[in-house]
Amino acid sequence: MKASAPGKVILFGEHAVVYGHPALAIPVTQVHVDVEVLDSSRRGIWIHAPGINLDAELNSLPDGHPVGSVILNFFQRQGIPVPALDIAIESTIPVAAGLGSGAAVSVALVRALALHTANPLSDEQVNEFAYEIEKLHHGTPSGIDNTVITYAKPVYFVKDMPAITFKAGKPFTIVIGDTGIPAPTKESVGSVRRLRMHDQCAVENIFNEIEQITLIGRRSIESGKPELLGELMDQNHEFLQALTVSSPELDNLVKTARKAGALGAKLSGGGRGGNMIALVEQPKAQAVAGALISAGAKHTIITEVS
Ligand code: MEV
Image 1 (cartoon, rainbow, N blue to C red):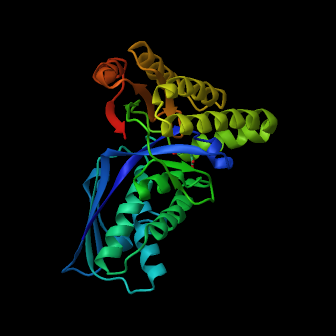
Image 2: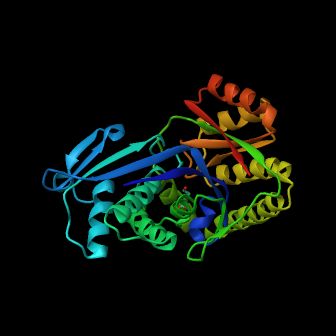
């Protein structure tokens, strides 16, 4: 049985979302994780994931291995004996780049296991399962990554609340630029936590400003005025800089995108490395992507939100 899950980017509200403020995220279908589960003629569960150099039997994986923990948790929760399986995992989502690669592996893998063992799971159950796995690996995730990836639709997300999917009143184009610098979300989330412990009032003020940006962003998207998002992205980027989660490389790509004609740009996800996003008029998308590559981006993706 096969299952897939897309990548994601956060449009507005990263970091603030960890503390109960809203955020907006969209799926990125140009990158994805594909999982195939087959009965095996050998004993045990064999995992083949050439992208992360993994070709091993489940029991040989270290405790807490991200793939191993999804499989073990699935069989424990379903209360069914562990069968003999071959599991192939292929991913085009870069790891630790803010594109949700971990959550996408969890979602695609649990869906493929559920299909193969004829234990169907609802989207809510898949989402809840993937969130439990995120918590094992990321400390205090908000749950936005697993949510947008499970539903594969734009979401307005508030921690511990049912996800609200939304539609764009008018399509718009985003260029994503990858610094190529791996940046585990856990670390930048930890830095923001320390900053907040040091000066809670200042950090909460920033979160409140980000919340306003997110709310206006959602209204602009739904009411068919996506061109307003450019200015909001610029403002959100400044607040993320104030939270210390940008980096010279991200700032450079953000500036480059604006100079090349983007309507606005910001880092996306945990920051410090990983990806940035830029809002562009569709005909300028290729030029902005080219400028990002010339400025040092390792990859770009052009995606349309419709
Ligand atoms: C990660 O994609 C977004 C952060 O807000 C962390 C989280 O929400 O769990 C940085």
